[in-house]
Image (cartoon, rainbow, N blue to C red; front, side, top):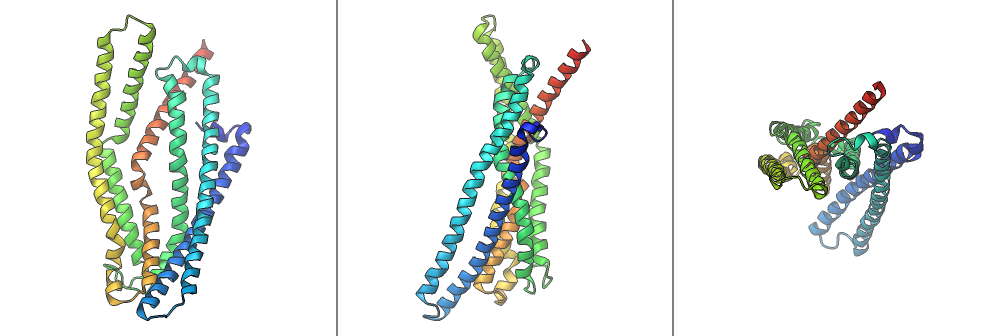
Length: 330
């Protein structure tokens, strides 16, 4: 799977491409920081305008909106370029995997589900990595940039439960998001979601294989096909039940998450210790930090799918290497 980073043929795409993606994501986060600052200035201006007639001019108002449009346009442009380049980058990664599988396919084709591993799982791997990989890196960068901002904005204002402690809001975000993430991870492990996904793919592969064989072999009994499909149906129904329990906890937590920043800021809002602009900056920065900390929580179903794909490909490559070792001994 990781020959993409080891072969000279792919050096430019693997390492230089990685640097381009990382740099572009960093630019996106920097622009996001500027947008957060704009929110504070804009809502302070709104508060000033609503408090006293003609406190601001119409030119100031339009100028502020134009500033946001400029930042948003740059952000969108960078995001589109990153998305386009990442798609090409990951297809090259998939190509590196597939080329190796093709080179050893004389051995690989003897393994059950080989065609599915080479075609379906490689494309699944690249598509999941396209969204999961870049969003993980971006989440880490957001933490690096927004945690100091959140600390600076929340210093010296009263925070629910933590009082006037300068680190109260950051620790509150940490406890809420990490606590929820740990809860969902434990729930996923208890429900064996990765194992269920893995078993589901294995049964689907066996069912697909017998259908392909039955096209050329008339001796395959319909009952055998029906038995395999019954296995597919059972594992799907089991998956639905397991994800039902998981989603009850996940969706309930994410809905409660909407109010978390307002709960922590309640003493400061009631006391009038923050302006409307500062409150908007804090809530947005809190949301960005909290969202980054909750990355695993929000991406958990996709992580489970990636773990299942990785497990199947690793097992597939292990069997290929075992066959190679046996052939060499013979």
